[in-house]
Image (cartoon, rainbow, N blue to C red; front, side):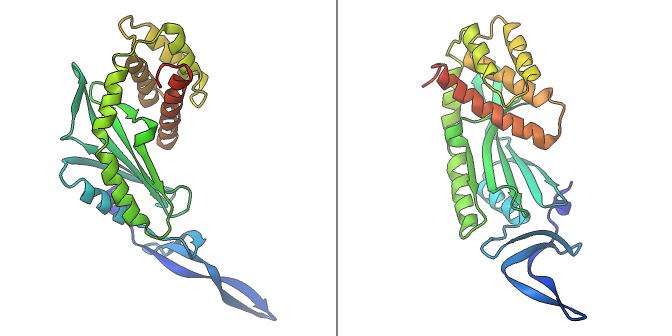
Length: 263
């Protein structure tokens, strides 16, 4: 899906419903709802409340581009559900960092927006390892923001995105600490097994990969085997893979705390 195809013309329209009066059919305007329309196809996308603030896909991308104007950015934009949902990926190529010798990562901004109220306008700051293109989710507390389509959502979104991008160095510090924290095999196994959001056969792949590498004994090593499996071996849709990556990374961090590996 090209940017041009993703940025079709979208608009709000009043909604009417049919009523029968004798042999005549009339249409009465609804007061509490409005329609979101693909104007290029004259096609209804969704029916939303009057309080819903329409934020167009193209507007979201422009806001992100403005915040990232000082970066060299590689974009990948796609839509689903007949254009109702947008998922955009912005790779910040000029902000690569060497986490440890030979292990280079770069920040990724993943943005989502929709017209069908499936999810909120939001973004997540992630990372990608260049050595194997693993998709890495940042620690929960600094990574993700979502906003309802109400009121000053656009202004709030732009401000929050700028703040989170500036936390990239904080994430690097956390991962560097993970790269020095040793974890015992039994503890590592317990951490992975507690990630019930990831199917059992994939949890087994993570532990088998980890156990087969004698030198991989830190939290960061274990996490990289997890992200390798979720990035490379899941035979599923792109949307489902993204969901599993998010869930498994979140549960990984929660499991570390439960096992008292991190505070």
